[in-house]
Image (cartoon, rainbow, N blue to C red):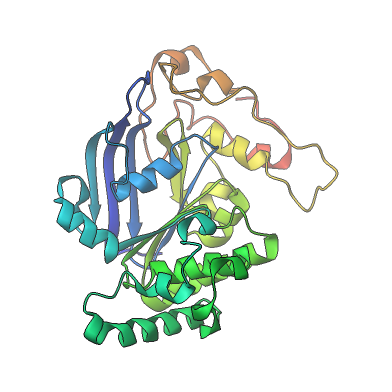
Length: 328
């Protein structure tokens, strides 16, 4: 899709934590356009959730951050505390993985939805409640839930409520941290359809973190693949999933279950992702890559035309999706 305005621009983001041998995030570049859904995918521990938290500066006090993060043109890393609080309450919102952990179990849903918008109680309560009813309808719920407590609702209903809460301030950017992980397949599909409707109706840009590549393919316009704190490949969803150019992307796709081959043995990525106590030289995927050469171990590949791989121009990795390994 054509993107005229970026609501999120991350450039050269590096995040260091104490007692680690390498940066948790290392030179991340990523953009999200208005009314665009961008997926950020990768194995657990690759840095996906930290990227979302960094976007709203929800980081440990000991963290050291370099680079640039701009939301709607404003630099998040240089904002005052007051401006940052206003940004989180208006321009950008976040949907966390576990909805039950995001909602106070002792308060009714109506209080949860309206608390962030009530600035002048004399006039705002009625308007906030009307807005809550509007958004509940948008996520497929009735206003009956306003009087209910979290324990009275299912996980899927609570996730819809968390999404409605995130939209109460009409944010230009919605950050979703694996919001469908704890849900059944049917509810996952409903949440995916809901996010698609939200971006069309409200023009909201969405950054969607997931380790489910099938879900990313279904929901996103563009995809960024993360490994060991770096973006190793990015591009339009159709072309990236149809013809991956990085061995890690191809390996992720090859390890995804497919309905057309239910009895086939799933492929697996050998080895383990590098931990934060291991200093990396060369390509971070070199130790697990079947196409590694000496240059990969010695020299870190820089992104070029959307992929960070020394051998991207010579490998035909789409063959892996058919169960064959190219000769390289």
